[in-house]
Image (cartoon, rainbow over all chains, first blue to last red; front, side, top):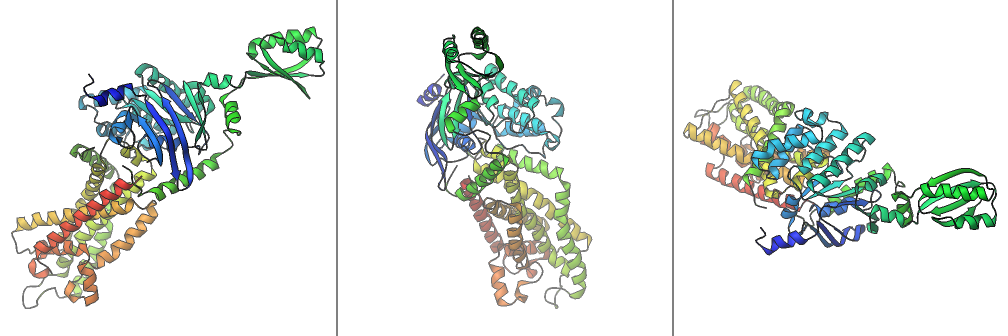
Length: 349
Length: 262
């Protein structure tokens, strides 16, 4: 089955391999020495605030942007020297819409199938099958300009799958969609990965999205990867759940006793009570209550905080992910366009 | 990735479908040349006794400007088609095409043929309408050969200027900017094309401008086919060679610039 050495390399290579990737937009380091690997069949997430370098990285992996330095390989092919092989192996859903609104949903799909040389005999059933999956079959002959934002997104996801890509790139797949549509799209992505075995590389600045979908997550900030692991391990790296007990007063003996409770890592007295870092809050809280009662403590209220990726993000980058609001994003977008314009003419494929 | 006729056809087909959906565009592209044709063709026709040696049979002014108006229609229709690239970039569809396993050359050819198709259709419609206001065709070569050559010249004009438009579109980001630059180019190109007046009536310095204007060779070529050799300024063969050379040049430049676009 594998006649040439080329083919063999491709088979053993990871789905994505990135080494020391750099993109310098005239002095601004959009991507600054990024390295990572994505295995075949993984759902890998790139998490970071707007402007962190997520889209720039995707653009380089998708052969749209030429890196300043470093290597990027997709399915064993070099993204700069073998762009055609890479393009045939990947499907992409861009951050910004990229459908032709003057064509119908079906025509958009058909156009894509032709460009990707999908076998003529299977084009029609394949399009209908995918449109059914994203629940657009009944709207397939309507012009895309009559679709809602969520419908366009679904159409793009279906289109990205048309040619059986090995790796599917999703750049902010649920940006600006309502919660219900987001859950739908998550279900499609999970389904695709599990049933069709498609490797998924997604970028997001939604913590819950990364947590929900990704087997592994790289946290990227200011063009650099600051953390890379499974969501569970990343969360565990924070030490555990945080329990806050509101207590009027408390003795040293009582604090000592709480430190002895199974699953409690640390107890810190604060002005308005105690902060406990515990193994598993839901299980440990009843034990804490028992000990408190034994020492005659009256607990006025309790709050449990389970660490989220947001906490990891703050811990690793020193700032929250939502610090930059829409304005920041728009600014970056317009900057991005500006860079594109200025970097034009410096080569490319 | 190799240049593929299937890819060119696919990209052309999209342009064609879009054109059929926006008939307004097609109609609007006819409005301006039609205005020229009616205004100049009917009004100026009464001012001039005719063009050519009065001793021999002269050509009516409306017949004289018909090749010019047809060339103008094709010029406008094709050069502004480059805006499609800017439009696709603005609305994101360009990325869909750029990441597809399709050669950049195929993309440019598909786009160019798409723009050229609508320009040529507009040109033919204007040609048909010109007969309605009384333009006459007096070629002194075989009528079928004249018709065939007229089609060849029309296609060359369309391809030359659609590629010129694409070349500019790869470098200009905004639709407004593109339109401004194109208007700036189109007007002198049109007035120095010999469409409205025989080139030998112009002062010398304007004649120079005319001879370096590639559109002039297109108009002159069409004049051979419509009005006959006496009305034309240069031999038909020379017109064809210069026009074909210019088409080759703009096609090459547009592909090179498109490939460099990131």
